[in-house]
Length: 277
Image: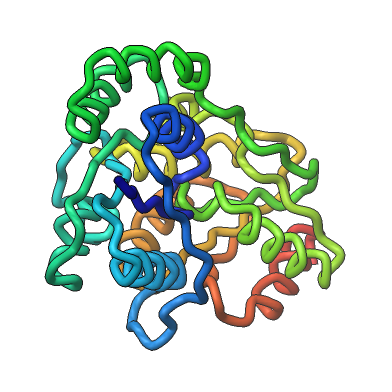
């Protein structure tokens, strides 16, 4: 039995547990390292996702492990207008006829995951004793990983959670800011705390939208942060619209930029505004 797993789309939050659990069940876990499918007309994270899924399909995995990014919450508002954020499985099925059967799992860890883990284990092994032993071995991995550490800079960085969980994205931001003599401050609260912050600014339905708005509210109230850099992965309306609505209510300088484009002029003018120039 071979199960394909994906890097990105919040994998840092859930994949450590599931990889260990699948291996404890005696299942082969298959990862691939492939370049993004840049010919596809989507944002970079989706291009990376599509390339991985295509490679796993070619390798003939029996199942594909996919995260439920929204924890079962459905909405047509905000990020719900983006099919990739709302339902990865349904969207991938439109692009990959013959997609391997999907094992959809929560994108965040807690004791509540045990029920789904038991279901997946029984499906893959048909061996209740093996499932029980495997769960006992990996139960300690159910604690959510702590937020990534952040440089203590003056530019608060706001982006979709699936971007901020990636070290490569953070390096890209740090390098761009460094060219202007600036240092970032990435949100350093757990997801549930950021969602609470977001609820104080204005209500959203999807967990990832609440988290995004919460980043704006949290970073804006930090005295250390003097300006905000809002990074979107693609210039499609839902996410930039949410961010523009959020910052209209706040006073600190900010710039909205798109991943993959040249940010230097925007960063230069942000620095000048932060310095009162």
